[in-house]
Image (tube, rainbow, N blue to C red; front, side, top):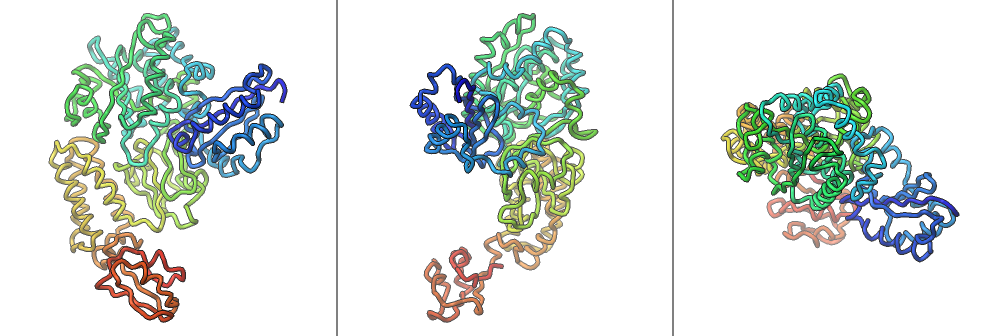
Length: 593
Protein backbone atom coordinates (compact mmCIF):
# COMPACT_ATOMS: atom_id res chain seq x y z
CA UNK A 1 0.00 0.00 0.00
CA UNK A 2 2.93 2.34 -0.62
CA UNK A 3 2.11 5.90 -1.73
CA UNK A 4 -1.63 5.35 -1.21
CA UNK A 5 -4.04 7.95 0.08
CA UNK A 6 -6.07 6.41 2.89
CA UNK A 7 -9.19 7.92 4.45
CA UNK A 8 -11.07 6.31 7.31
CA UNK A 9 -14.54 7.70 8.06
CA UNK A 10 -16.32 6.68 11.25
CA UNK A 11 -20.01 7.37 11.89
CA UNK A 12 -20.27 9.77 14.80
CA UNK A 13 -23.94 10.64 14.75
CA UNK A 14 -25.93 9.94 17.90
CA UNK A 15 -26.42 6.31 16.83
CA UNK A 16 -22.76 5.87 15.98
CA UNK A 17 -21.60 7.34 19.27
CA UNK A 18 -24.08 5.20 21.23
CA UNK A 19 -22.74 2.10 19.46
CA UNK A 20 -19.14 2.97 20.35
CA UNK A 21 -17.96 5.31 17.61
CA UNK A 22 -15.69 7.31 19.91
CA UNK A 23 -13.88 4.17 21.00
CA UNK A 24 -13.60 2.96 17.39
CA UNK A 25 -11.92 6.21 16.31
CA UNK A 26 -9.51 5.97 19.24
CA UNK A 27 -8.73 2.36 18.32
CA UNK A 28 -7.94 3.32 14.72
CA UNK A 29 -5.66 6.16 15.82
CA UNK A 30 -3.76 3.91 18.25
CA UNK A 31 -3.46 1.02 15.79
CA UNK A 32 -2.26 3.25 12.96
CA UNK A 33 0.29 4.86 15.24
CA UNK A 34 1.50 1.45 16.40
CA UNK A 35 1.99 0.41 12.80
CA UNK A 36 3.84 3.63 12.02
CA UNK A 37 1.29 4.57 9.38
CA UNK A 38 0.16 7.90 10.77
CA UNK A 39 3.72 9.23 10.74
CA UNK A 40 4.57 7.98 7.26
CA UNK A 41 4.13 10.84 4.79
CA UNK A 42 3.73 8.52 1.83
CA UNK A 43 0.68 6.93 3.40
CA UNK A 44 -1.39 10.14 3.55
CA UNK A 45 -3.61 8.39 6.10
CA UNK A 46 -6.22 10.16 8.22
CA UNK A 47 -9.22 9.28 10.39
CA UNK A 48 -12.36 11.45 10.24
CA UNK A 49 -15.65 11.62 12.08
CA UNK A 50 -18.78 11.94 9.94
CA UNK A 51 -22.46 12.32 10.66
CA UNK A 52 -25.35 9.85 10.42
CA UNK A 53 -25.05 7.42 7.51
CA UNK A 54 -28.75 6.60 7.62
CA UNK A 55 -28.64 2.88 8.42
CA UNK A 56 -28.41 3.48 12.15
CA UNK A 57 -29.15 -0.15 13.01
CA UNK A 58 -25.76 -1.16 11.54
CA UNK A 59 -23.58 1.22 13.57
CA UNK A 60 -20.74 1.60 14.04
CA UNK A 61 -20.39 2.06 10.26
CA UNK A 62 -16.86 2.66 8.98
CA UNK A 63 -15.69 3.62 5.48
CA UNK A 64 -12.16 2.77 4.42
CA UNK A 65 -11.15 4.61 1.24
CA UNK A 66 -7.87 3.66 -0.40
CA UNK A 67 -7.13 5.92 -3.40
CA UNK A 68 -10.85 6.66 -3.59
CA UNK A 69 -12.00 3.04 -3.59
CA UNK A 70 -14.50 2.70 -0.75
CA UNK A 71 -15.27 -0.30 1.43
CA UNK A 72 -17.95 0.02 4.10
CA UNK A 73 -17.89 -2.05 7.28
CA UNK A 74 -20.80 -2.57 9.70
CA UNK A 75 -21.19 -3.37 13.41
CA UNK A 76 -17.57 -2.38 14.05
CA UNK A 77 -16.23 -2.63 17.61
CA UNK A 78 -12.85 -1.40 18.88
CA UNK A 79 -11.42 -4.93 19.06
CA UNK A 80 -12.10 -5.39 15.34
CA UNK A 81 -9.99 -2.42 14.28
CA UNK A 82 -6.61 -4.16 14.47
CA UNK A 83 -7.59 -6.72 11.87
CA UNK A 84 -8.95 -4.05 9.50
CA UNK A 85 -5.68 -2.12 9.73
CA UNK A 86 -3.47 -5.17 9.27
CA UNK A 87 -5.40 -6.91 6.51
CA UNK A 88 -7.08 -4.07 4.64
CA UNK A 89 -4.89 -1.00 5.09
CA UNK A 90 -1.53 -2.77 5.17
CA UNK A 91 -2.19 -5.74 2.88
CA UNK A 92 -5.00 -4.41 0.70
CA UNK A 93 -7.42 -7.24 1.46
CA UNK A 94 -10.81 -6.20 2.85
CA UNK A 95 -12.17 -8.21 5.80
CA UNK A 96 -15.11 -9.58 3.82
CA UNK A 97 -17.16 -10.99 6.70
CA UNK A 98 -17.47 -7.49 8.19
CA UNK A 99 -18.26 -5.71 4.92
CA UNK A 100 -21.86 -4.49 4.59
CA UNK A 101 -24.26 -7.02 3.07
CA UNK A 102 -26.47 -6.67 0.01
CA UNK A 103 -29.38 -5.28 2.04
CA UNK A 104 -27.22 -2.26 2.90
CA UNK A 105 -26.93 -1.49 -0.80
CA UNK A 106 -30.66 -2.12 -1.30
CA UNK A 107 -31.39 0.26 1.58
CA UNK A 108 -29.65 3.09 -0.31
CA UNK A 109 -30.47 2.09 -3.90
CA UNK A 110 -33.90 3.74 -4.19
CA UNK A 111 -33.00 6.79 -2.18
CA UNK A 112 -32.24 10.15 -3.80
CA UNK A 113 -30.11 12.23 -1.49
CA UNK A 114 -30.08 16.02 -1.55
CA UNK A 115 -30.18 17.16 2.06
CA UNK A 116 -28.32 14.04 3.19
CA UNK A 117 -25.88 13.98 0.26
CA UNK A 118 -23.04 15.32 2.42
CA UNK A 119 -24.07 13.67 5.69
CA UNK A 120 -21.74 10.76 6.24
CA UNK A 121 -19.21 12.37 3.92
CA UNK A 122 -18.19 15.65 5.58
CA UNK A 123 -16.74 16.15 9.04
CA UNK A 124 -19.50 18.10 10.82
CA UNK A 125 -16.91 19.79 13.04
CA UNK A 126 -14.74 21.04 10.17
CA UNK A 127 -15.98 23.84 7.90
CA UNK A 128 -13.18 23.06 5.46
CA UNK A 129 -14.60 19.59 4.89
CA UNK A 130 -17.95 21.12 3.82
CA UNK A 131 -16.27 23.77 1.66
CA UNK A 132 -14.25 21.11 -0.19
CA UNK A 133 -17.57 19.69 -1.43
CA UNK A 134 -18.88 23.07 -2.62
CA UNK A 135 -20.14 24.37 0.71
CA UNK A 136 -20.87 28.12 0.80
CA UNK A 137 -20.46 28.39 -3.00
CA UNK A 138 -24.22 29.00 -3.25
CA UNK A 139 -24.00 31.79 -0.67
CA UNK A 140 -21.19 33.52 -2.55
CA UNK A 141 -23.14 33.16 -5.80
CA UNK A 142 -26.23 34.76 -4.27
CA UNK A 143 -24.37 37.63 -2.59
CA UNK A 144 -22.22 38.53 -5.58
CA UNK A 145 -24.34 37.85 -8.66
CA UNK A 146 -28.02 37.64 -7.69
CA UNK A 147 -30.63 39.99 -6.31
CA UNK A 148 -32.96 38.99 -3.47
CA UNK A 149 -35.84 38.84 -5.95
CA UNK A 150 -33.88 36.54 -8.28
CA UNK A 151 -33.01 34.27 -5.38
CA UNK A 152 -36.64 34.04 -4.30
CA UNK A 153 -37.65 33.23 -7.87
CA UNK A 154 -35.19 30.31 -7.96
CA UNK A 155 -36.69 28.86 -4.78
CA UNK A 156 -40.24 29.39 -6.07
CA UNK A 157 -39.38 27.72 -9.39
CA UNK A 158 -37.85 24.75 -7.60
CA UNK A 159 -41.21 23.95 -6.00
CA UNK A 160 -39.67 23.57 -2.54
CA UNK A 161 -42.36 23.38 0.14
CA UNK A 162 -41.91 23.57 3.89
CA UNK A 163 -40.63 20.27 5.23
CA UNK A 164 -41.86 20.89 8.76
CA UNK A 165 -45.36 19.59 8.13
CA UNK A 166 -47.60 22.24 6.58
CA UNK A 167 -45.96 22.09 3.15
CA UNK A 168 -46.32 25.83 2.41
CA UNK A 169 -44.28 27.03 -0.62
CA UNK A 170 -40.95 28.29 0.76
CA UNK A 171 -40.27 30.91 -1.89
CA UNK A 172 -43.73 32.39 -1.44
CA UNK A 173 -43.20 32.70 2.31
CA UNK A 174 -39.90 34.52 1.69
CA UNK A 175 -41.61 36.79 -0.83
CA UNK A 176 -44.33 37.78 1.66
CA UNK A 177 -41.66 38.77 4.20
CA UNK A 178 -39.63 40.58 1.54
CA UNK A 179 -42.64 42.72 0.62
CA UNK A 180 -43.61 43.40 4.25
CA UNK A 181 -42.79 46.99 5.24
CA UNK A 182 -40.02 47.73 7.75
CA UNK A 183 -36.24 47.47 8.01
CA UNK A 184 -36.17 44.96 10.89
CA UNK A 185 -36.99 41.39 9.95
CA UNK A 186 -36.12 37.99 11.39
CA UNK A 187 -35.45 34.49 10.10
CA UNK A 188 -35.95 31.57 12.48
CA UNK A 189 -34.87 27.98 11.97
CA UNK A 190 -37.29 25.64 13.70
CA UNK A 191 -35.26 22.73 15.07
CA UNK A 192 -37.80 21.89 17.78
CA UNK A 193 -38.35 18.34 16.54
CA UNK A 194 -40.77 16.73 18.96
CA UNK A 195 -42.50 13.84 17.18
CA UNK A 196 -41.99 10.46 18.88
CA UNK A 197 -39.55 8.41 16.84
CA UNK A 198 -38.46 11.35 14.65
CA UNK A 199 -34.80 12.25 14.27
CA UNK A 200 -34.53 13.93 10.85
CA UNK A 201 -33.64 17.47 11.87
CA UNK A 202 -31.35 16.35 14.65
CA UNK A 203 -29.38 14.14 12.27
CA UNK A 204 -29.05 16.90 9.66
CA UNK A 205 -27.62 19.34 12.20
CA UNK A 206 -25.37 16.68 13.70
CA UNK A 207 -24.14 15.58 10.29
CA UNK A 208 -23.91 18.82 8.31
CA UNK A 209 -24.73 21.95 10.33
CA UNK A 210 -23.14 24.27 7.75
CA UNK A 211 -25.81 23.41 5.17
CA UNK A 212 -28.44 24.81 7.55
CA UNK A 213 -26.38 27.92 8.28
CA UNK A 214 -25.77 28.55 4.58
CA UNK A 215 -29.47 28.11 3.86
CA UNK A 216 -30.34 30.58 6.62
CA UNK A 217 -27.97 33.27 5.31
CA UNK A 218 -29.36 32.89 1.76
CA UNK A 219 -32.89 33.11 3.13
CA UNK A 220 -32.06 36.17 5.22
CA UNK A 221 -30.52 37.92 2.19
CA UNK A 222 -33.63 37.14 0.15
CA UNK A 223 -36.14 38.51 2.64
CA UNK A 224 -34.00 41.34 4.03
CA UNK A 225 -33.33 40.01 7.53
CA UNK A 226 -30.20 40.78 9.53
CA UNK A 227 -30.82 38.64 12.61
CA UNK A 228 -31.75 35.02 12.95
CA UNK A 229 -32.38 32.32 15.54
CA UNK A 230 -32.10 28.56 15.62
CA UNK A 231 -34.75 27.32 18.04
CA UNK A 232 -33.52 23.88 19.07
CA UNK A 233 -34.52 21.63 21.92
CA UNK A 234 -32.00 21.24 24.73
CA UNK A 235 -32.43 17.44 24.58
CA UNK A 236 -30.19 17.49 21.47
CA UNK A 237 -26.81 18.18 23.13
CA UNK A 238 -24.67 16.86 20.26
CA UNK A 239 -26.60 18.85 17.66
CA UNK A 240 -26.34 21.99 19.81
CA UNK A 241 -22.60 21.49 20.34
CA UNK A 242 -21.89 21.02 16.63
CA UNK A 243 -24.14 23.91 15.66
CA UNK A 244 -22.34 26.27 18.05
CA UNK A 245 -18.98 25.17 16.64
CA UNK A 246 -20.21 25.63 13.08
CA UNK A 247 -21.45 29.15 13.82
CA UNK A 248 -18.05 30.10 15.27
CA UNK A 249 -16.25 28.67 12.26
CA UNK A 250 -18.55 30.48 9.81
CA UNK A 251 -17.93 33.80 11.59
CA UNK A 252 -14.15 33.29 11.48
CA UNK A 253 -14.36 32.60 7.74
CA UNK A 254 -16.35 35.78 7.18
CA UNK A 255 -19.45 33.80 6.15
CA UNK A 256 -21.57 35.02 9.04
CA UNK A 257 -21.75 38.32 10.86
CA UNK A 258 -20.74 41.72 9.48
CA UNK A 259 -20.09 42.19 5.74
CA UNK A 260 -20.46 38.55 4.78
CA UNK A 261 -17.97 37.40 2.12
CA UNK A 262 -16.78 41.00 1.77
CA UNK A 263 -20.19 42.32 0.71
CA UNK A 264 -22.49 44.91 2.29
CA UNK A 265 -24.83 42.25 3.63
CA UNK A 266 -24.69 41.44 7.36
CA UNK A 267 -26.52 38.70 9.21
CA UNK A 268 -25.90 36.75 12.40
CA UNK A 269 -27.51 33.82 14.17
CA UNK A 270 -28.24 33.08 17.82
CA UNK A 271 -29.19 29.75 19.36
CA UNK A 272 -32.31 29.59 21.50
CA UNK A 273 -32.71 26.40 23.53
CA UNK A 274 -36.23 25.05 23.89
CA UNK A 275 -37.45 23.12 26.91
CA UNK A 276 -39.07 20.33 24.92
CA UNK A 277 -42.68 21.52 24.60
CA UNK A 278 -44.23 19.92 21.50
CA UNK A 279 -46.52 22.92 20.99
CA UNK A 280 -43.48 25.14 20.44
CA UNK A 281 -43.11 23.51 17.06
CA UNK A 282 -46.09 25.69 16.10
CA UNK A 283 -44.64 28.94 14.75
CA UNK A 284 -46.51 31.48 16.88
CA UNK A 285 -45.86 29.47 20.06
CA UNK A 286 -42.20 29.25 19.07
CA UNK A 287 -42.07 33.02 18.62
CA UNK A 288 -43.63 33.53 22.06
CA UNK A 289 -40.98 31.26 23.59
CA UNK A 290 -38.12 33.22 22.01
CA UNK A 291 -39.66 36.42 23.37
CA UNK A 292 -39.49 34.93 26.87
CA UNK A 293 -43.20 34.22 27.14
CA UNK A 294 -45.02 30.96 27.72
CA UNK A 295 -45.04 28.96 24.48
CA UNK A 296 -48.67 29.27 23.46
CA UNK A 297 -50.05 29.86 19.95
CA UNK A 298 -52.09 32.84 18.91
CA UNK A 299 -54.79 33.26 16.32
CA UNK A 300 -53.79 34.00 12.71
CA UNK A 301 -53.90 36.36 10.81
CA UNK A 302 -51.74 38.33 11.13
CA UNK A 303 -49.23 35.74 9.98
CA UNK A 304 -45.62 35.89 11.17
CA UNK A 305 -44.47 37.07 7.72
CA UNK A 306 -46.37 40.28 8.47
CA UNK A 307 -46.15 40.41 12.27
CA UNK A 308 -43.92 37.90 14.00
CA UNK A 309 -41.02 38.10 16.45
CA UNK A 310 -41.37 41.29 18.52
CA UNK A 311 -44.01 42.41 16.07
CA UNK A 312 -41.66 42.39 13.08
CA UNK A 313 -41.94 40.42 9.82
CA UNK A 314 -40.59 36.93 10.48
CA UNK A 315 -40.03 33.79 8.44
CA UNK A 316 -39.87 30.40 10.15
CA UNK A 317 -38.45 27.47 8.19
CA UNK A 318 -37.59 24.07 9.55
CA UNK A 319 -34.12 22.48 9.40
CA UNK A 320 -34.70 20.30 6.36
CA UNK A 321 -36.24 23.15 4.36
CA UNK A 322 -33.21 25.39 4.95
CA UNK A 323 -30.71 22.59 4.32
CA UNK A 324 -32.18 22.19 0.82
CA UNK A 325 -31.47 25.81 -0.14
CA UNK A 326 -27.70 25.62 -0.89
CA UNK A 327 -28.16 22.60 -3.15
CA UNK A 328 -31.02 24.23 -5.06
CA UNK A 329 -29.07 27.46 -5.63
CA UNK A 330 -25.90 25.56 -6.56
CA UNK A 331 -27.56 23.11 -8.98
CA UNK A 332 -30.57 25.10 -10.19
CA UNK A 333 -34.33 25.04 -9.69
CA UNK A 334 -34.86 22.59 -12.55
CA UNK A 335 -32.44 20.10 -11.05
CA UNK A 336 -34.41 19.99 -7.80
CA UNK A 337 -37.80 19.98 -9.54
CA UNK A 338 -36.89 16.85 -11.51
CA UNK A 339 -37.44 14.86 -8.31
CA UNK A 340 -40.93 14.32 -6.97
CA UNK A 341 -44.34 14.94 -8.54
CA UNK A 342 -46.02 17.85 -10.27
CA UNK A 343 -47.24 19.38 -6.99
CA UNK A 344 -44.79 17.80 -4.54
CA UNK A 345 -41.31 18.59 -5.82
CA UNK A 346 -37.98 17.34 -4.53
CA UNK A 347 -37.09 14.78 -1.91
CA UNK A 348 -38.15 14.17 1.68
CA UNK A 349 -36.26 12.79 4.66
CA UNK A 350 -38.08 10.20 6.76
CA UNK A 351 -37.24 8.44 10.01
CA UNK A 352 -38.23 4.85 9.18
CA UNK A 353 -38.97 2.96 12.40
CA UNK A 354 -41.26 0.34 13.90
CA UNK A 355 -41.72 -3.31 12.86
CA UNK A 356 -39.33 -3.00 9.93
CA UNK A 357 -36.16 -4.96 9.19
CA UNK A 358 -34.10 -1.97 8.06
CA UNK A 359 -34.77 1.03 10.28
CA UNK A 360 -32.98 4.32 9.90
CA UNK A 361 -32.89 7.69 8.19
CA UNK A 362 -33.87 7.76 4.51
CA UNK A 363 -34.28 10.41 1.83
CA UNK A 364 -36.57 9.57 -1.07
CA UNK A 365 -38.17 11.44 -3.98
CA UNK A 366 -41.69 12.58 -3.15
CA UNK A 367 -44.18 10.42 -4.99
CA UNK A 368 -42.35 7.17 -4.28
CA UNK A 369 -44.75 4.33 -3.51
CA UNK A 370 -45.15 3.36 0.13
CA UNK A 371 -44.52 -0.23 -0.96
CA UNK A 372 -41.03 0.72 -2.16
CA UNK A 373 -40.17 2.30 1.18
CA UNK A 374 -41.45 -0.58 3.29
CA UNK A 375 -40.37 -3.57 1.23
CA UNK A 376 -37.45 -2.37 -0.89
CA UNK A 377 -35.68 0.16 1.32
CA UNK A 378 -37.00 -1.17 4.62
CA UNK A 379 -36.54 -4.82 3.71
CA UNK A 380 -40.03 -5.85 4.76
CA UNK A 381 -41.60 -6.64 8.11
CA UNK A 382 -39.66 -7.98 11.08
CA UNK A 383 -40.12 -11.70 11.64
CA UNK A 384 -41.78 -11.92 8.19
CA UNK A 385 -45.13 -11.07 9.76
CA UNK A 386 -47.89 -9.29 7.83
CA UNK A 387 -47.88 -5.54 7.33
CA UNK A 388 -50.89 -3.96 9.00
CA UNK A 389 -50.41 -0.21 8.67
CA UNK A 390 -47.91 2.62 8.30
CA UNK A 391 -48.30 5.70 10.45
CA UNK A 392 -46.98 8.88 8.83
CA UNK A 393 -46.69 12.40 10.18
CA UNK A 394 -46.13 11.65 13.85
CA UNK A 395 -48.84 12.37 16.44
CA UNK A 396 -50.50 14.71 13.93
CA UNK A 397 -50.63 12.08 11.19
CA UNK A 398 -52.74 9.10 10.34
CA UNK A 399 -52.47 5.38 9.72
CA UNK A 400 -52.36 4.05 6.16
CA UNK A 401 -53.63 0.43 5.95
CA UNK A 402 -51.71 -2.36 4.23
CA UNK A 403 -54.32 -2.44 1.44
CA UNK A 404 -53.15 1.03 0.38
CA UNK A 405 -49.45 0.13 0.26
CA UNK A 406 -49.18 1.37 -3.35
CA UNK A 407 -50.12 4.92 -2.37
CA UNK A 408 -47.66 7.63 -3.51
CA UNK A 409 -45.92 9.33 -0.61
CA UNK A 410 -46.57 13.00 -1.31
CA UNK A 411 -48.49 15.87 0.27
CA UNK A 412 -51.69 15.44 -1.73
CA UNK A 413 -52.00 11.64 -1.69
CA UNK A 414 -51.40 11.28 2.04
CA UNK A 415 -53.85 14.10 2.79
CA UNK A 416 -56.55 12.34 0.74
CA UNK A 417 -55.88 9.17 2.72
CA UNK A 418 -56.39 10.97 6.03
CA UNK A 419 -52.73 11.42 6.97
CA UNK A 420 -49.94 13.92 6.35
CA UNK A 421 -46.28 13.97 5.35
CA UNK A 422 -45.57 15.95 8.50
CA UNK A 423 -41.97 16.45 9.49
CA UNK A 424 -41.10 12.91 8.39
CA UNK A 425 -41.95 10.33 11.02
CA UNK A 426 -42.87 6.93 9.53
CA UNK A 427 -43.78 4.05 11.84
CA UNK A 428 -44.43 0.59 10.39
CA UNK A 429 -46.90 -1.68 12.20
CA UNK A 430 -47.63 -5.38 11.83
CA UNK A 431 -50.44 -7.79 12.71
CA UNK A 432 -49.45 -7.77 16.40
CA UNK A 433 -50.33 -4.06 16.75
CA UNK A 434 -53.75 -2.98 18.01
CA UNK A 435 -54.94 0.07 16.08
CA UNK A 436 -57.21 1.25 18.89
CA UNK A 437 -54.25 1.16 21.26
CA UNK A 438 -52.12 3.00 18.66
CA UNK A 439 -54.69 5.79 18.48
CA UNK A 440 -54.71 5.95 22.28
CA UNK A 441 -50.91 6.17 22.38
CA UNK A 442 -50.82 9.21 20.13
CA UNK A 443 -53.73 10.87 21.94
CA UNK A 444 -51.86 10.41 25.23
CA UNK A 445 -48.99 12.36 23.68
CA UNK A 446 -50.99 15.21 22.13
CA UNK A 447 -53.25 15.57 25.17
CA UNK A 448 -50.23 15.86 27.45
CA UNK A 449 -48.59 18.37 25.09
CA UNK A 450 -51.66 20.60 24.66
CA UNK A 451 -50.87 24.08 25.94
CA UNK A 452 -54.43 24.38 27.25
CA UNK A 453 -55.17 27.75 25.69
CA UNK A 454 -58.25 26.76 23.72
CA UNK A 455 -61.15 24.66 24.99
CA UNK A 456 -61.56 22.35 21.95
CA UNK A 457 -58.00 21.10 22.29
CA UNK A 458 -57.67 21.21 26.08
CA UNK A 459 -60.97 19.49 26.84
CA UNK A 460 -61.61 17.72 23.54
CA UNK A 461 -58.38 15.71 23.50
CA UNK A 462 -58.94 14.81 27.16
CA UNK A 463 -62.40 13.43 26.39
CA UNK A 464 -61.11 11.55 23.34
CA UNK A 465 -58.41 9.95 25.47
CA UNK A 466 -60.95 9.01 28.14
CA UNK A 467 -63.13 7.22 25.59
CA UNK A 468 -60.16 5.40 24.03
CA UNK A 469 -58.92 4.35 27.46
CA UNK A 470 -62.36 3.07 28.36
CA UNK A 471 -62.53 1.04 25.14
CA UNK A 472 -59.08 -0.52 25.54
CA UNK A 473 -59.83 -1.32 29.19
CA UNK A 474 -62.84 -3.39 28.15
CA UNK A 475 -65.40 -0.86 29.33
CA UNK A 476 -66.51 0.36 25.92
CA UNK A 477 -70.16 1.39 25.64
CA UNK A 478 -72.64 1.43 22.74
CA UNK A 479 -72.28 4.78 20.99
CA UNK A 480 -68.59 5.24 21.88
CA UNK A 481 -67.44 4.77 18.29
CA UNK A 482 -69.89 7.35 16.97
CA UNK A 483 -68.95 9.72 19.80
CA UNK A 484 -65.25 9.37 18.97
CA UNK A 485 -65.85 10.32 15.35
CA UNK A 486 -68.13 13.24 16.15
CA UNK A 487 -65.86 14.66 18.84
CA UNK A 488 -62.77 14.23 16.66
CA UNK A 489 -64.32 16.28 13.90
CA UNK A 490 -65.31 19.00 16.39
CA UNK A 491 -61.79 19.19 17.84
CA UNK A 492 -60.28 19.38 14.38
CA UNK A 493 -62.63 22.13 13.24
CA UNK A 494 -62.53 24.36 16.32
CA UNK A 495 -58.98 24.17 17.73
CA UNK A 496 -56.79 27.27 17.60
CA UNK A 497 -53.56 25.83 16.22
CA UNK A 498 -52.16 22.91 14.27
CA UNK A 499 -51.66 20.74 17.34
CA UNK A 500 -55.36 20.59 18.13
CA UNK A 501 -56.46 20.63 14.50
CA UNK A 502 -54.43 17.51 13.70
CA UNK A 503 -54.56 15.68 17.06
CA UNK A 504 -57.68 13.65 16.02
CA UNK A 505 -55.99 12.35 12.84
CA UNK A 506 -54.81 9.05 14.40
CA UNK A 507 -58.34 8.45 15.71
CA UNK A 508 -60.13 9.37 12.48
CA UNK A 509 -57.78 7.40 10.25
CA UNK A 510 -57.98 4.24 12.39
CA UNK A 511 -61.76 4.58 12.55
CA UNK A 512 -61.81 4.94 8.78
CA UNK A 513 -59.71 1.88 8.00
CA UNK A 514 -59.92 -0.31 11.11
CA UNK A 515 -63.46 0.20 12.37
CA UNK A 516 -63.91 -3.53 12.84
CA UNK A 517 -61.24 -3.48 15.55
CA UNK A 518 -63.12 -0.77 17.42
CA UNK A 519 -66.34 -2.80 17.12
CA UNK A 520 -64.60 -5.92 18.45
CA UNK A 521 -63.34 -3.96 21.46
CA UNK A 522 -66.70 -2.34 22.23
CA UNK A 523 -69.26 -5.00 21.34
CA UNK A 524 -67.34 -8.26 21.75
CA UNK A 525 -64.97 -7.13 24.51
CA UNK A 526 -62.13 -8.59 22.47
CA UNK A 527 -58.81 -7.22 21.19
CA UNK A 528 -58.14 -8.97 17.84
CA UNK A 529 -54.41 -8.21 18.04
CA UNK A 530 -54.12 -9.53 21.59
CA UNK A 531 -52.64 -6.31 22.94
CA UNK A 532 -55.19 -4.74 25.27
CA UNK A 533 -54.53 -6.52 28.57
CA UNK A 534 -58.01 -6.27 30.09
CA UNK A 535 -59.54 -7.84 27.00
CA UNK A 536 -57.25 -10.86 26.94
CA UNK A 537 -58.07 -14.40 27.98
CA UNK A 538 -55.38 -17.06 28.43
CA UNK A 539 -56.54 -20.64 27.89
CA UNK A 540 -54.57 -23.90 28.13
CA UNK A 541 -55.13 -26.24 25.16
CA UNK A 542 -55.40 -29.74 26.64
CA UNK A 543 -54.21 -31.49 23.50
CA UNK A 544 -50.86 -29.70 23.67
CA UNK A 545 -50.32 -29.45 27.43
CA UNK A 546 -47.77 -31.99 28.76
CA UNK A 547 -48.24 -31.12 32.42
CA UNK A 548 -44.66 -29.89 32.77
CA UNK A 549 -45.88 -27.39 35.47
CA UNK A 550 -43.62 -24.61 34.16
CA UNK A 551 -46.59 -22.27 33.61
CA UNK A 552 -47.85 -22.86 37.15
CA UNK A 553 -44.42 -22.11 38.58
CA UNK A 554 -44.17 -18.68 36.87
CA UNK A 555 -47.77 -17.60 37.52
CA UNK A 556 -47.61 -14.80 40.15
CA UNK A 557 -51.33 -15.20 41.01
CA UNK A 558 -51.34 -19.02 41.46
CA UNK A 559 -54.13 -19.13 38.89
CA UNK A 560 -52.93 -22.32 37.16
CA UNK A 561 -53.84 -25.69 38.62
CA UNK A 562 -53.26 -29.31 37.62
CA UNK A 563 -51.27 -32.42 38.44
CA UNK A 564 -47.85 -33.09 36.99
CA UNK A 565 -47.93 -34.80 33.56
CA UNK A 566 -51.65 -34.04 33.18
CA UNK A 567 -53.23 -31.08 31.36
CA UNK A 568 -53.48 -27.93 33.48
CA UNK A 569 -56.16 -25.22 33.47
CA UNK A 570 -56.30 -21.51 34.26
CA UNK A 571 -58.79 -20.18 36.81
CA UNK A 572 -60.05 -17.11 34.94
CA UNK A 573 -61.36 -15.31 38.04
CA UNK A 574 -57.86 -15.33 39.55
CA UNK A 575 -55.80 -14.74 36.37
CA UNK A 576 -54.26 -11.26 36.28
CA UNK A 577 -53.51 -11.56 32.53
CA UNK A 578 -49.80 -10.86 32.91
CA UNK A 579 -48.85 -13.23 30.08
CA UNK A 580 -46.04 -14.96 32.02
CA UNK A 581 -47.49 -18.41 31.25
CA UNK A 582 -47.84 -17.63 27.53
CA UNK A 583 -44.23 -16.48 27.28
CA UNK A 584 -42.90 -19.47 29.24
CA UNK A 585 -44.73 -22.37 27.59
CA UNK A 586 -42.41 -24.25 25.21
CA UNK A 587 -45.20 -26.37 23.73
CA UNK A 588 -47.48 -23.57 22.47
CA UNK A 589 -50.18 -24.98 24.67
CA UNK A 590 -51.49 -21.61 25.84
CA UNK A 591 -53.84 -19.62 23.65
CA UNK A 592 -54.05 -15.84 23.95
CA UNK A 593 -57.17 -14.14 22.71
